[in-house]
Image (cartoon, rainbow, N blue to C red):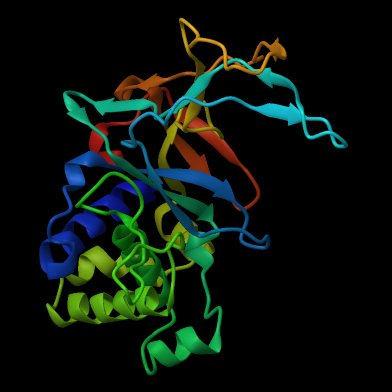
Length: 272
């Protein structure tokens, strides 16, 4: 069976080595994993996740009286943190998830995208998505790359026409370097075609599938001094959350057209 996330990681590593704009990315600190998503449903094809953001400033939830505006109650103080993800001794800063089989079955989603790649085969939209997610990784600072406004300040948006144009430019730059066709061959087949050719499609996932490492809330201990306004303080009822992940938390899963099923308990590192 074809390990789709392994093929994607290899392709992404090759792209980083050939496209100057992405050359500062360290793929040893990027984990690629699969998420479930049927081709006939709406949703993202892929998502970039940052797991290297520092803890947030302390804060609390609060409620006010609708008529008087007075604070009636608040939660305990808490911070939001990133989970720790390590593969061996290497800390992971970013993760990129690909939704299977939806990613495999991408088509021209807009006239603009078709015009961007006029005359090129339809599978190029998958390469566009791969470069798109790599471009989200900001090598300068923790977090997803922000779009700069004309005045040099950062927009809260992480997409924009310039972003999409940059991705098209990088896709064409990569193809102009004449990469090994074997690295791109798997993109040229839809999910049914891959299943027929390889007997199945598998990928790295977390053992907690369908969940994966995400930012979480932690109650501060000890609590800061109470604010000047007195009100009721409610305890935060937080679910049990795994906050540290290693290669032992990875496994291989077979993706099917309508579902998925686990194959082995652990996936090897390069499958990520």
